Image (cartoon, rainbow, N blue to C red; front, side):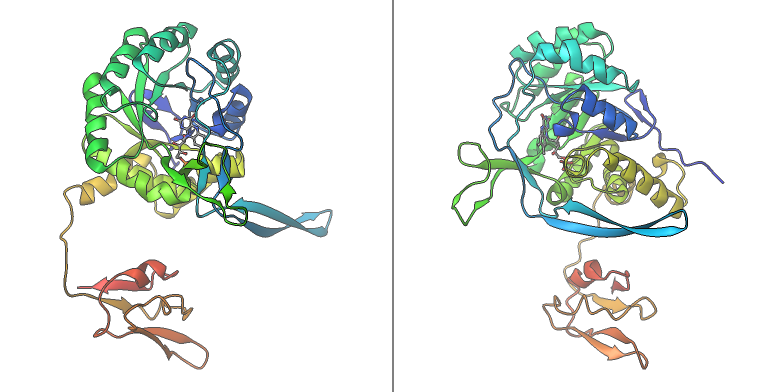
Length: 399
Ligand SMILES: Cc1cc2nc3c(=O)[nH]c(=O)nc-3n(C[C@H](O)[C@H](O)[C@H](O)COP(=O)(O)O)c2cc1C
């Protein structure tokens, strides 16, 4: 049986697998980072440090909506079977945060936290912010540690146009790898920033930071749920995955340096999507906040399962696959086409029926027990919604 190879080469840095914690609560100190290392990540990324500790408002994190997912597991001990109930917090609507950067001083990180994180014996990336002046103070101190492999600088709170200056300043004091972490902007600005980082000497791009500001408040009290001035927060998690994947794709096909994808990764399949879109490695924040460090082990297992199932033995085989296939764009069709059902795959679940805005879907009897989906070719407008809803991939569009 061929071995699955999860290793990646990130701008010369050899990683045993592409997973890293992202800068955030799950990288908030050395001990927390050791837990991520125990759970299997391939590289460590630390919480953003700056010249001053962040004045973090309280409260500073919330889920937009939540659902408790309850699962049951049966275990057998000495011939007796026990039922274990597991409840996990899930959110499909994402998280808002106003956490800024670390509340620890730079000295605390330099004297304690980086040294603890180092015990993991994994490559370490320090995250820093924000201005070129800040870099002159922070970078020589981090460089003096002698064991930091990379520096990721956040562009979250800086004016556009400073990326070149920041990169040059970091490069002056630090000989390791430098990554620019970009926030999601309009496509032109983002590509322009990635190109600016590349031409200034950056070794890679991290995309994306959380998106915002956004607002969600409590309608029962009509008061903010977060402690920032107006209750604003930055959204992360599941809802930003398509935004992140688009940014990764746009950046990866416009620069030659590697991209680290971050945004909405909750599963092994999400990792594959980021890698196909052009990411060399990935970071995880919201999923690690909600699920704890075991999330990395779960996602690594799912990644291996997906690869086995698809007979893919190295991540190189899927890296940039979407760029290779669609990098030049696909033919845009504005007419024709209709959805077709593969009756062998349709389970008659009716999921597709209510959302067919054109009334093209009905169900007919397949046999004594089962029904099967029927799509009226003349009513169907090939909008594609049913294709995305069908749980068994029974519907495809025909041209
Ligand atoms: C509570 C919280 C704190 C964060 N703190 C930082 C930070 O200090 N520095 C940074 O560059 N990004 C920070 N981020 C952004 C994450 O690193 C990541 O880019 C973003 O959340 C998208 O990934 P996700 O969808 O996996 O959460 C933070 C995100 C959250 C949710």
